[in-house]
Amino acid sequence: MNRTGLLLALLSAVLFGASTPFAKLLLGDMSAQMAAGLLYLGSGLGLAVVLGARAALRLPSHDEAPLTRADLPCLLGVIATGGVAGPLLLMAGLARSDAASASLLLNMESIATLMIAWVVFRENVDRRLLVGAACIVLGAGVLSWQGHAAVAPGALYIIAACVCWGIDNNLSGRLSGADPVRIAMLKGVVAGSVNLCAALVLQRAHMPDAAVVAAAGGVGFLGYGVSLVAFMLGLRHLGAARTGAYFALAPFIGAVVSVMLFHAHDLGRLAVAGMFMAVGLWLHLSERHDHEHEHTVMAHTHRHVHDEHHQHEHGPDDPAGEPHTHHHVHARLVHSHPHYPDLHHRHDHDGDGHSHDPDHTHGPDGHTHAA
Image: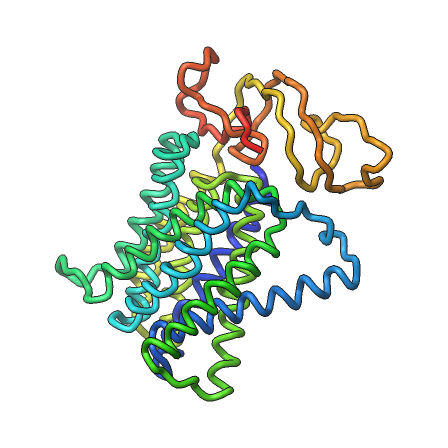
């Protein structure tokens, strides 16, 4: 198990899940589009301060790989789906739903992320991962069940937001080798500005009080900005499907916070839901994917240390010390070890000639890599 990726994905889930009820509280003072703009602008401006401080202090993470022109299509897709459309749809749904139900509906993001990773990007997903995800969703269902099947007025907006974020998460996986703080900052500033300007110009909305603006900025910085940075670092280690599956715990966190703020759920149902989610989390934690796989020749730029996947010569202009960032070439490598669909293990498991244990979850560390 890649514990670094796991902790990052869980941190992202906790921060985002806890932010949803607080975002609901802020909606009493502003429109949905105004809230979406302030939340994302808070995340972007907060991360801009982090970038400036990181460079000034020359902290160890200041040398992340820069964005390139080739990253522009994915970056624009991330901003459009995850930064503009997703938050706007979520705020519209929150305005029409109670906070706890909205938190639970956000579980659809992990399902959208997993399905897009599996079907569109062909990331390996096996039965263990699917069953674990189903347990987590079942836990959310226990919390949201009201004794009859009904669609809340804001449900379709929130589900649409989750689909947008599912697209965003998979596109972000294509960018996970680049600096996550810079990507999240750009996403926050651009998306926040678009939604804020639309609220002020098109809706003729008025800016709320300074205290409300500051609160929205704080919630956005932690729940959207820092959460997104942790999520993108998780993508680097685990791939989209697995990071999205761990992120599915966010609705449970949101429901717990909603209980404390609004007393919206009874503790019995919360305990049952927690049990289902614990089983799902255990299934993911106990996953092991190990088989012989081939790494094809690949060239790219990202922050790395010289491990078994990074055995290359340095030129006179390449940085010394580790970790470091520079353009490097991976030679062809065939080996076997436990792996996940991280930056270096995105390979097709269909018809690859290897013998796989069907009970092992394939965390693709084999590789047909796109740099």
